Length: 195
Image 1 (cartoon, rainbow, N blue to C red):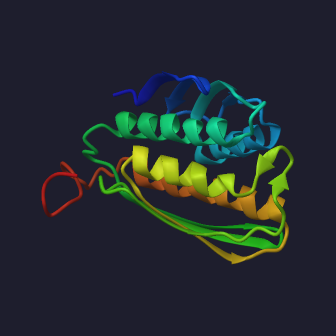
Image 2: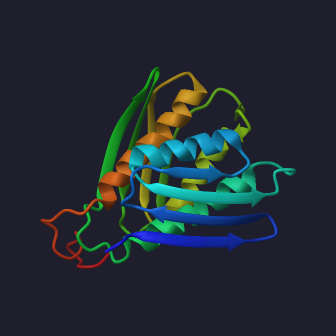
């Protein structure tokens, strides 16, 4: 069964179109108007081996907040829809990703219960056009709209670009693990019988 979802969301602040293929080859076509954020999402797509097409026209004359947060909302909704009833998937995923000085851990449970534990520390206000505080807003939006338990923990790092990129790539690798089919899993991986 194909796990491909197309979503759109239009508000007075953003106009977003997104297509996500969980079983892709890592092809990203990203245009949010925020160059560094595009770079992060391309890394997410490539290293998670997801095909992601995302276009966002946001109110960047205000700032990058609405664009980045709303992209997180729509991507989270697409993830939740693509995994469906979660039958046969691994459910849990984790990865520790090094990027030069930075080392970031990401752990995921596709439990149906939204929760974000966020422990990343940046030294500057921006990476390119993207506010470093927006990383938390993005991952919070994903965790709640996808109803996932998401932990991000910085183990080391002093370069903000490396810390941010390690977080996005660790998230991609952990999500790839969590959504991957496991032939040993019959139904959903839960003692309750439902997620």
